[in-house]
Image (tube, rainbow, N blue to C red; front, side, top):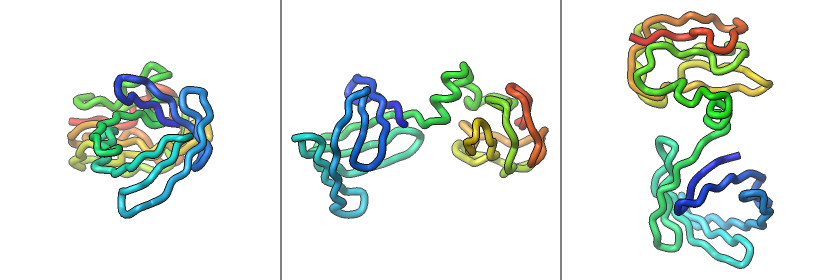
Length: 163
């Protein structure tokens, strides 16, 4: 599922390949690749020429029928953290990274002294039978890791300290 805002209209999109649901309305979709990052879409009786211009920092920039659209989106992890009231958990400038929910640390990808940039993977946390790749939301230096691989953690338990 993806939550986005296109032309000041909020949309929730879910589904698979040819059968999508947009804001609780089922739509039929056909897609034909025309080249790298270039597609032709048929949604209902409307046709779209779509080129992916850029996809970074949770904003996808598309050229749709000659018009440039910048479309911000939220991933399942973003939506889950927001729903739990933890949307600022990974915000730039935080000196501590706390577990967003109870779970198990599957893999630690950072180590003390690592300089991390926005988007750098920090760890993999399994929660609610899902593996969540936790990434840095800002630049910083890892001061210490307070968890171990295989360790069960509680919500709000400090996992990483930043300088």
